[in-house]
Image 1 (cartoon, rainbow, N blue to C red):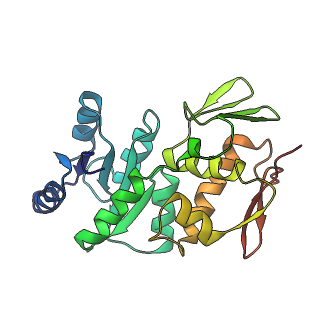
Image 2: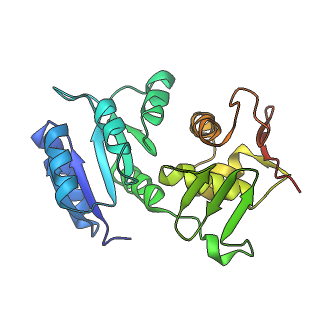
Image 3: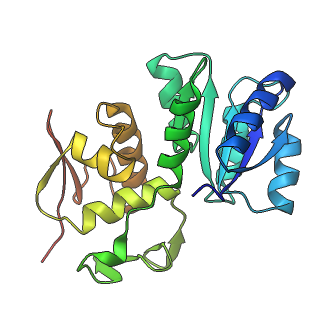
Length: 230
């Protein structure tokens, strides 16, 4: 994990310098970009595992940059924001981020967020088949692809992790905390906004009528249940 490559995108040189020093000391390979356009160039030139992306930047905002990156990449994205309001957090997740962290933050907190972004649920260690099909949907855990009808639908890393956990634990109610700790990691458990946004995104991609889902069902105040037809 400490060999992972991290791209820091922030218009403030001092913040980039502090983050680069901390992450390099933790064993990460670190690159920097001072804005969205430079970040796009670096992503085209190199492969990164995680992007730390500041929300408030001159020119293209971090939210716009996140959405643009998501159109062509499954890279882990953590948004850096000075605003901790629920609406701001939801906006970051809606733009395609895997996670967010509010400034000021500690180095241990940042490292925990990066570890969560790099975390992948060990699909093939379970007894579940590599390919799960139901209705017009096919989920392949080896290629991490989801086909709906004849279309290969793009999922972010966390969206896929969450979907795969649902379909390999069907027809039972899974509590919110269990989902968060399994997919994001043991440091999580109360971030209900994460689940609300990610479940809505998954429904948009696999449900014929996302407002009236037949697969991914809400169990009010408890968690979610994935109805997998026999």
